Image (cartoon, rainbow, N blue to C red):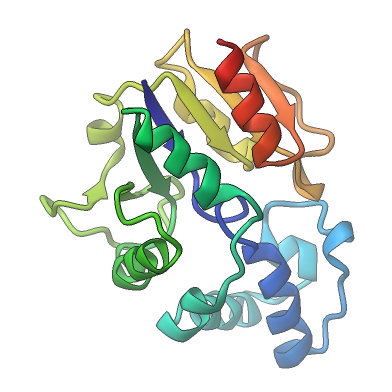
Length: 200
């Protein structure tokens, strides 16, 4: 079994960290529960310049390494790996964040999970022909049995896998998302994800 796992807000509490950065840098006091858009510029009401500063700060090595683990993530994924399943962390983080992201996984006991930076959102230059960066044409050659994802903007990247079971990690910005088909299931936590996959 091959499992796709998004990094931010599935493995770690990125959005909660960004609320603190926005408050500290721009005095934007937006509670996590009121982040109704995946677009952080929209959620925090930032100018283009402020948004760039927010993203730069949030992707420094120090900040990336400080993100709290989403409860149960490493425990459940290591159970799957112990059983012989493959775990692929596919993140939309820029390729320059790979080193800190890899270190975060290793420090949280996920050293056996594979990590790839996928140019999901066209945010910046991605390294060509590296071992860890993927352009969409590379990604579309990959196949998975399950996916854990929080962003409605990423759902379209599953269209080439009609049998894929998608676990949508329940977050404020996907509360009203329409799921493309019956293969999508809203999940509140990692224990529920574990339960659902074990039932299959």
